[in-house]
View 1 (cartoon, helix red, strand yellow):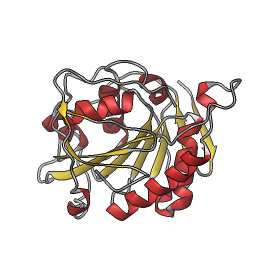
View 2: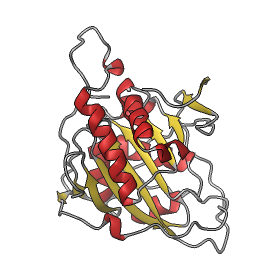
View 3: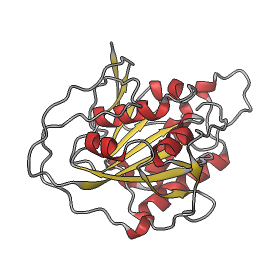
View 4: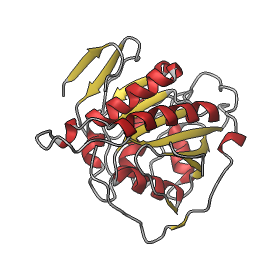
Length: 270
């Protein structure tokens, strides 16, 4: 396994979209209370972590990382489950927020470009800035950002950071497997769960994962138990509670995450 470090901030950059709806999923109802649930005060220093893994978890990715302001890490893929460790007593259960953001609209005008290298359109660039501002207004600012290393996800993040500098405070890790896993039926939810648990610490309360369809809306639907549609630059806002991210995923199970809303560039939260 190798690791390549890129100095400085994230620069700019998807998968084809198609529809997937597990048979147990029910139609989503409009939810409009994301702003009404402010984050609690930061909990005490994080304890060791208890791994509570759902049956949906099929594979994990083992990575290294560094803070964004020092470097941005790109990690190769190696599947392994995180090692469990006991949870410290007295660490209260808290609300944990997961943002599932699909990259902004990308261009198909250069047929010689690899899919991985397609840039954003002017509409996509504008949408990325709008969604960044809306997330800031709602108070859903990520402390950790995990994203595909495709050109369109990198560019989406770069524009969000330029539009709302607070996004620069989040630690950023590029996960190459996010690009490929999104095209595999039924694999994204488990992969995202294990990636979040692997890379987060218990004091981080808001994590954003940015990637591609079909996997991102499939994962949002599986986590919440409702049909979630994510068009380009749509962000699903999910909440669960737990002393750790592992516990939050385990207690929520499949369908137990609360969908607080979907942020869209064109209108308000729905």
